[in-house]
Amino acid sequence: MSSEPKTYVSGGRVLSSPPLTVRITRFFENIYVFIGLYLVSFFSLDPYTAAQNSRFNVTRTGKNPDASARWGGGGGSWGPGGGGGGPGGPG
Image (cartoon, rainbow, N blue to C red):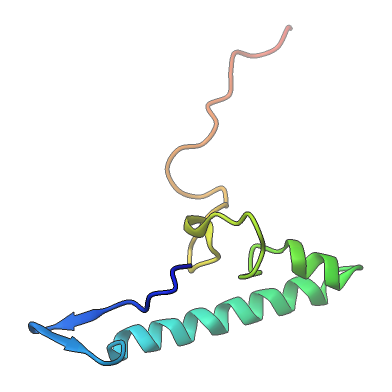
């Protein structure tokens, strides 16, 4: 993370705080991450380790910033692409 705060500009004016849409988006992302982390730790046998290794952990070291847990982000078998399979086996 950078130590410098992000600058927001609207209509040629520098804003003193993020726009309302950014604040609302951050709020819902925080709720999503909280619920995800809660569910991961709730349904595990070792909640502490599960929470540390969860994709919802925002302080995990070595984390790729582009691979954060977001709405519709990552994984799943839906969407374009996928495995093509190969030729059939013997027989």
